[in-house]
Amino acid sequence: MKIEFWSLGKQHESYVLEGVEDFTSRIQNYFPVEWRILTLKKTAGSEPGKLKRLESELVISALKPDDWLVTLDE
Image: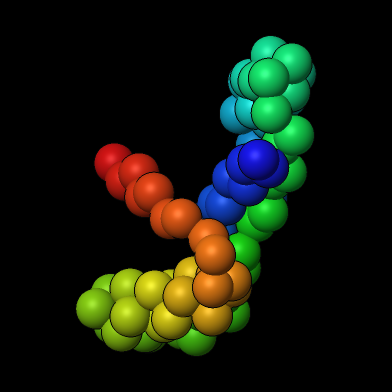
């Protein structure tokens, strides 16, 4: 089983990337892991509700038929 971690938005800041790399090196002992950053071009003045809908469409379009999706949000 391969685990893919998806992140919405921009590339990780350097301090976040350090933690991501540490976590990835630990979990790779048990499962193959891949990170993907899904980016959405945001237009100036876009409504937050519209952006959430576009982000959800982006995630859904990236899913394959046999995928399991677990979402984490602040």
